[in-house]
Structures are given as structure tokens and as C-alpha cells.
Length: 298
Image 1: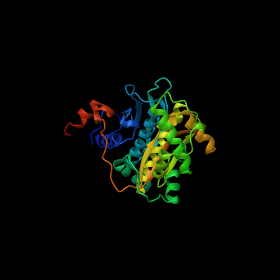
Image 2: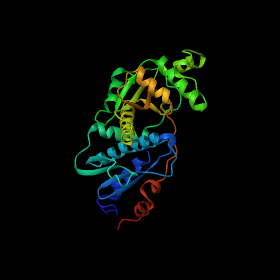
Image 3: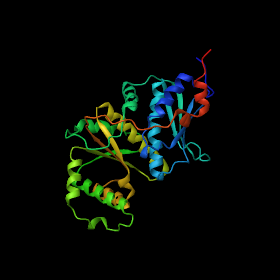
Image 4: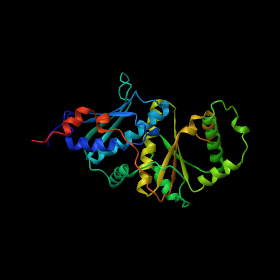
């Protein structure tokens, strides 16, 4: 098979990597990354032309890293990941090296298949709860990622946190101390009803640096894909954690040892959400790869 200009990658392999790139989740569907195929490795680069909060941007790129790893594994190679590999090229967030041949596991194949059907669920879930063993299996996907997925119990507390975050984000001048908010109210009652059939996983990291944000996104995507293989729908929340009072209250109420980075809502849905618009292959892999992929093979 013809080799591309990217070293060891064939056109067929580049196609697998490219298609998986187009299905990465990101904050507000901004897709703040670019992928470079070079010398049998994949470089994940951060786009500088996308305006996102720094934590959200790094976490979005972390989700991309999880999908790239799966794509390399499905191609039958062991994936060696280095996060922030070059201190002089700060836009390179990760390098995924395609090492020696190694067949993918059944679990990896299932998660890779989940990439194409994963959607962000926008709306209420059905009343069917997520079973405890399913939640445990989803959370276990974060093991060894440098982040931890913690199930949050206490719907009333979460409703109060989210309600405060919504009000604060809607009004930047809001200065009401978190502890002074009323414990119940009509809006909070409706929010509790909506949260009741859901399961919330909170992703925490030991630190709060850029590398921690990348690892949080990487862990989140692994867990989300595992949930999809179990027939669960999911949605990510990061906005509430932009409010310092909510972040510190979560740490205090749930006695967290790490820094809260993102929330994954899990539940059941009877409808399939439409796919969101995505960047073209040329934007993420480069126009040079697109032109070459269109050439007929002699």
C-alpha cells in the first residue's frame, strides 16, 4: 500500500485516524485541536484561534487524546502517550507513538465503535435509573489516567450547587454568598426532579495545572465511551465549576482530596441526539493530507 508523506502511516491508517478526529467531543463544539501525523506518531496540537476558558480548552483536547489512542489501538499498534512532550512547543499537548504490533482488546474495539455514536444529550433523561454496577464500570475507565471519577450522591445538594452556578453565571455582578442562598425554592425543586433519575460523575485531579486538565478530559472521554457501550446517554457540565464558590463547596461537602474539573451526567434516553457540526478533515489533518488522499493509487 502507498505510504503517505507522514512517515510510516499508510493512507488507510490516516483515514482511520482522521475519521476518529472528527468525532471528538469539545466544549461548545469548538474542537480546539489540530492533528499532525508524523514518523509513525500522532501529534495533538492546540489551536490558538479558538476562544475558550483555558481549563475547558485543555480538557477538550484531553478528550481528543483518548480517541486518538483508541484509533491507534484499533490499527493494531501499542499506543505510547506522552503529555506535553516538548516544553519549547507549548501548542503540542500530547504525542501518541504507534509502537510494536499489539491486537486491540474487545473492550477497546467496543469503545472505538462508541466514538461514532456518542452524542451529547441535551435535555432530561427518562426515569429509568443507572444501575450501580454500570456506574462502577464507567468510573473504572478512569483508573490509571491521572484523574478520578467519583459518583456524587445527594440530589438536593447538587441542585443547590447548580442553581447557584446558573444564577452567578447569568449575572456577573451577583455577590450573594453561597451559604446565604435559600435551601429550597420552586426552581430548585424542579432542578431536583430533573436530577433524580441521573447519575453524576465528578472528575477530579491531584493538581490544577494544564497537564491535570488534559488528563481530566482524557479520563472523561474514556468513561463516556464506556457508558455508551452500556447503552447510556451522557452530557458534560463544566460551567458550574467556573464559579469558585461551587468548586470549593463541592470539595467541602464531598470531602474531595483533589480539584474538581468536570461533571458527566449519565442516564437513559429514548431519543438519539442529532450529530453536531464538525470541522473538515483538512482543518484537523491538513490540506496536504486531503490532496494526497484523493490521488488514485497506481
